[in-house]
Length: 46
Ligand SMILES: [Zn+2]
Image (cartoon, rainbow, N blue to C red; front, top):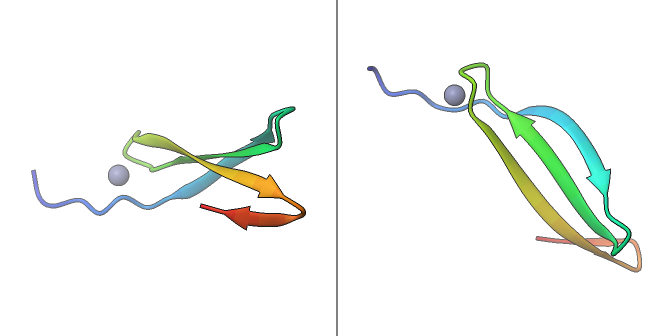
């Protein structure tokens, strides 16, 4: 296969009761991934 560069498409957000933001992303090729952020006093930290 030729080299494929994933394109992240926003697929939704969710926030746990612990204040962790979960970002869901996907690519048109079917790949999916999640990123989490801790929310403290309204600031986002990777
Ligand atoms: Zn892809």
